[in-house]
Image (cartoon, rainbow, N blue to C red; front, side, top):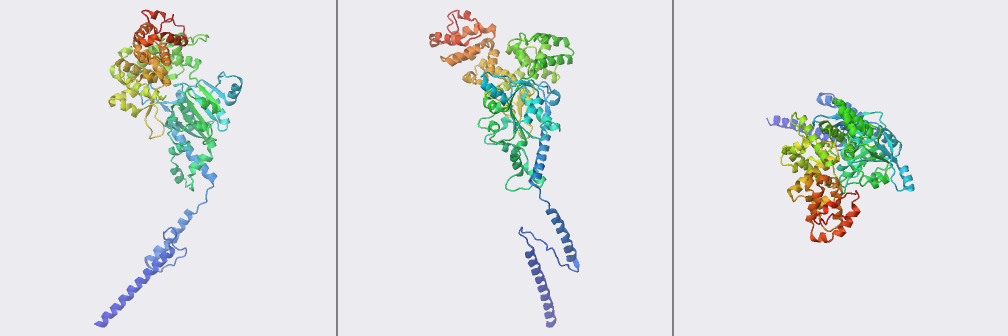
Length: 609
């Protein structure tokens, strides 16, 4: 018995020993095959087992390793090859992005009704001057010389042929500068034969530039460079290859920067691109209103002034508009009113201010609509804009399928007035900083409820101008700066009539960006314009100047009453200084207006002997 037990124990110990030796052998082999990465690698030559699962599994492993080896051993791309891949990826991305900027919604239509820019873009009147023209002018005379007429195609050819060309495009608000840049971007994205087809284009709203951001960082923020790198298996050393490409190939980049006048305080100034302090070989096009552009003009290679519609385009537009509604004779009567029916150069006739508005396509559309409905155009600018406001509201009602028509400004329903005043308040806050667009979020904080907010955005005074890139704030812009200034003036006049403490009288008087807003406020106040001027009755030369300048915008029929009211509001100290004030007024009043009749009853303020 004991012998049998001992034999069994002996066999068991041999089996255990054998298993232990095999484990040890395997562990040792694994340690030998462990590479620097910490992963196990199979040796190139492996011993085969003759039997069992080991033979089947091990025999397949060398083939797998061969596959992996074939995948990892790839010819290394040259930097030039990688640059071609990067540019191609960026071109594809940008073209996909800018194919979508062709959609726009005119304010007179429903928000879901979009137009193609290519269908509505009309050649603008452009004036072009080059740096050499500017240098000749500087040497010869101090008088500003107007540029020569040009076309968009010709201007783009000049830009293309000038190394690292820096271009400034100026024009008043609503003249089509933004549409012009969007049109260029859209044409670049859809036309393989475009004059700038080989360039890498970036369209940027200047108001989106934030403090501390370089233009290279702005681009990198918009680009998913990791996707480009991983998708194309690009080599990554200490530098991002996409960023390296943009720096070393900056001569292949063209920036379209829109709205220099809306640059935020402390933000990166695009003039650095003009001065070649960053991406020095890149082409740069900047748009701006004419204000405060002296430095940009100094450093630009080409200056293009956008003049909106020319006289011939205005005439053509009027003809097309009234032909489309089968009212050809009515169109002829408007052309006669503007003096466009003859060879005379007295364009505008008795409506000089209205005719100036016609250079803006959308304002011209409103004027045509007002003429269609009324057959008359007011000569006083505020009265004209009252008609334009009614026109916009009637177009809104028509879109909504409502048969009611608003024929008188004073009869605008309260719910629409409330929406207009909310817009006016938001526009006023923006205009103080020379900003035309409004942020929906800011407007929503001013509106009492969502219904009022939606009404303000849908009436037709603004259109959706949200940047193409996702994740940005939702922005809205009026079709013309004067629309914004008129609504801001209406808002101020309403607050002044109420005696609201929100009115910033000194801000209104001094802010240079509020010139037209002041004029509209005077117009909407009418016979009560003295309520705006009363707080300015202080013995100070600048205050005298402000009062006189505003009096020029008072409607003729209200002049005498307002002058008498102001005279009664004068303090004794002001009356004591009346002679000095009169001398100041004499130097400022240059329109020959006879206001001596206002001196009845001792009108010391404005009586001129």
